Length: 306
Figure 1 (cartoon, rainbow, N blue to C red):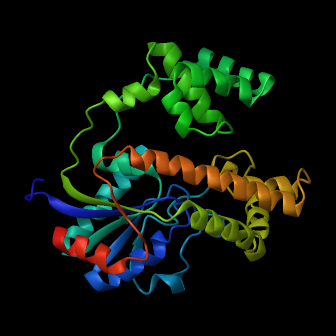
Figure 2: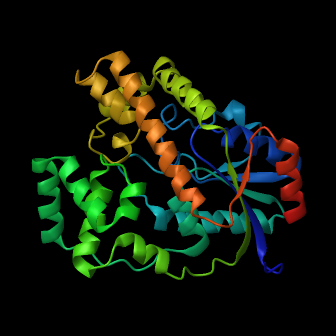
Figure 3: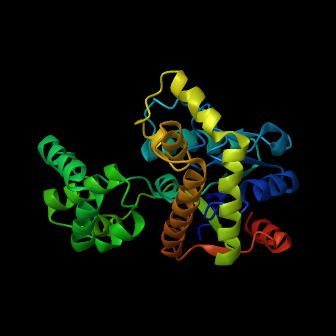
């Protein structure tokens, strides 16, 4: 590790492992600030479904890159990197500890290594694949993805129409699986030394937390929150509103699923999402795995690093 580089701490892990709460406690002890690395918490008006920490839960700790764009504004990993680098340098210039916190693995990878040049989309191929997805059903196209790029298929949900079709499109354009292009790319050096810590709890306990959180989201008003967004004119097919939680609330509002069915579907999809997150993080050999309950060990690791 190059000790001359400026240092940042990454705190990640699957959903419902307590990242936000732990980060606040650590920031209080370390004179730190928190940079959000959750792809959904950047959106304004989307609080319950993203488990966004309330202002009272932030304990006065500055939280950056939360509520920075509207649901209909473009935001992606490249824009995240641009925003995050500016914020991180500002935090470090003020001699504060920088904690990057969130479970969006692609945003972490983008921040630390940049994004490689992927072939531009071909409108004809994209239109054909999207048409196939809609007419033949998600299963048929997802099965094709599993054949041509099983590694990508393992990290993409069959319902993710955009990413499924994009991965197949890249294969048709290049003859190379998208996953191979990613793994073979030498990502640019971001200029930071990083301590990457991934929170981990036993699967049964994690699933219990996910199930409880899913029920709590509906009880706490995700349906009403979603309805407010729709009433403001945001279309239900916007990418943020097709995310976990909001798409389930929309199905309920549109009468396509009952209340209990929507909660159960949210639980199942969130468990699947957590599994995909773990698959992503396990592929990173630099990740340090730790229990969120072992606060003393986590704090020691960070102090030794910084």
